[in-house]
Length: 130
Image 1: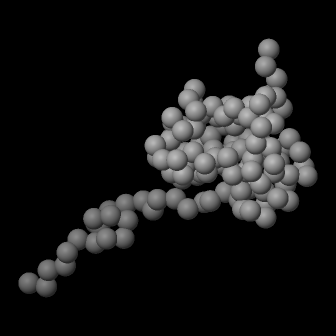
Image 2 (image 1 turned 90 degrees about the horizontal axis):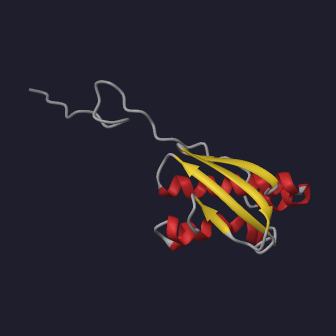
């Protein structure tokens, strides 16, 4: 049986990521794939690993991530947030480095809803004087 060392939930926009830290050699799995396979751009795959780089834990844990909802960018940031939370839960000394880099702060910006009588959230229909 595999034992989880720590767990963290990450959120961004409408994406939610569940991150499990396990003993291992640095392998990261996102929904059964490597980050490079799952995310279309290399930048988003590297974005996930940033909390590990800051805390010098790149090859210490095996990381299992299940992410759902939202788009590619939101899912990438949700994975990063969840990993940072899991690292902070595993070792409290990681917290200061993660906090100073802004990884523990949840980015609460969401898409504004569309209002009735308008074309979008803020865009209005064209006004006709005559």
